[in-house]
Structure formats: C-alpha cells, structure tokens
Length: 247
Ligand SMILES: C[S@@+](CC[C@H](N)C(=O)[O-])C[C@H]1O[C@@H](n2cnc3c(N)ncnc32)[C@H](O)[C@@H]1O
Image (cartoon, rainbow, N blue to C red; front, side):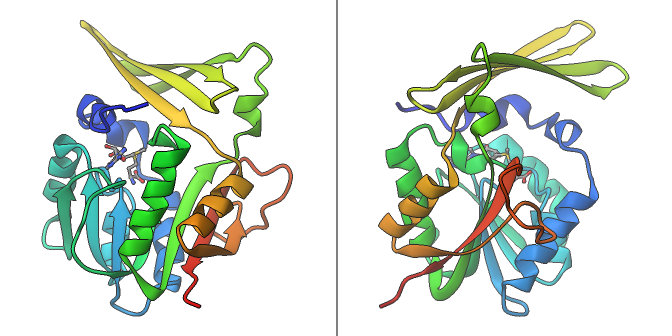
C-alpha cells in the first residue's frame, strides 16, 4: 500500500499544536534523548512535525535535524525554532538520505505506525541505521496495540475539544488481518469542516524488535514512559531504544 506521507501534515499543520498542546511530556522526552546522547551531540528526528520535542531537545544543548514529509509542518517548526540549533529537510524518512550520521535517531508519538506496511517500516529502521553512528541509539515511541486490536466491533470514535470554538472528531476502523487502524480526523469549527485521513499500521513490540534485527540493530531498553517506568502487561505504549549490532 502506497500512501502520500504528506497528507497528514498538510491537512493538520495549522492545528497540530492544538491537538498536541504543550505539556511536560515533551520536556521529559527531550531529557530522555539527551541522557542517551553525548553532550552537544546530534539528533535526527524522523517526522519532526512542528517541533514539539525538537525545540526542547535544542534547548537542552542538542543539535537537531528534523525530516518531515510535510512542508507546512516544517514551516511551523522553523518559525518557532528562532535561533535554536535546528535544521530541517523535506523528505520521506523511509528513503531520505540526509548525508551524514547522528548520535541518536528519534521517531516519536506513533509516527512509525504512519508508515503503512511492514516492508516500509523495515525500510524506516534500515534508514535510521544508515544515519546512526555505530555507538548511536534509535529511540522509538509507539502505542501497544492490543486495545485497538481487541475493539469488540473493530470501530471506535473519539472527540477532542481543541479550544472554545473547535473540536476534532476521530473515527477508527480496525483491520485486524492487516494490523491497520484507518483513522478519519474531522476538524470542526464554525463554518468549517475539514477531513484528514490517517493510516496507523500497528505492530507489537516483538515485531518491532525483529524489524530492528533485520535492519542490524537490537533492543537495549524498553519503558512505558519517558521517566523510565517498567513496561508491563497493562502498558498502553512503549519507548524502545535500539543500538546497532556491529559484530
Ligand atoms: C504525529 S506527528 C509527530 C510530530 C512530532 N514528532 C511530535 O512529536 O509532535 C507525525 C509527523 O510525521 C510526519 N510523517 C509521517 N509520515 C512520514 C514519512 N513517511 N516521512 C516523513 N515524515 C512523515 C507527518 O507529516 C507529521 O509531521
């Protein structure tokens, strides 16, 4: 399945920061990455978006390069970046060549699952490895899919009130066979209805670990949050850290 990776960002760039408003979470994510990156080191973020984590990472002294498929998302990012050490490039992170290696590659908040097939997700791991130093780390944050996968009717809806005048309605339809949740985001405000489709091709932790092995990496850490709480059977997401296998 081929899907234009720019659709999500082009459709939501102007309201993305309302959907994901500033919370302590982004600072915790930035600190987590900083603790696994040499002082003043470089981080490549795949799907950097409007810089929710990139900005706090730069504020912690990291050099950040962000790749995104959406120019509108990158425009918001670069406007917010000011004189921080952040650079960006338009591209598909499953194939893009940023020309160089980094200390850390970050793929946050379910962005890996926006890649619609196992084959392309492996390509994403391989591309992360290509951009990593041998002693570098790949940090991935994704949801644990059991809850989605077990929806009794395979469908669900969610409502998020964004501000006093607007809301986001999200419909979810799960295709268990292909491990795909088809999401329909409807943004509503007075006089406006905007719909943005999104595909989430989910995978369980063991499948991700195998993809990493295919790409020449192995799991070294896994937690349920950025503070390092244990990942266990009730956890709804995980933060996984992979290192290159060099022998
Ligand atoms: C859920 S947002 C996450 C943004 C940011 N990392 C954050 O933590 O808020 C996912 C981002 O990934 C981008 N994206 C999705 N698929 C992509 C791909 N194949 N290549 C590059 N960017 C992609 C989208 O445009 C969007 O900006």
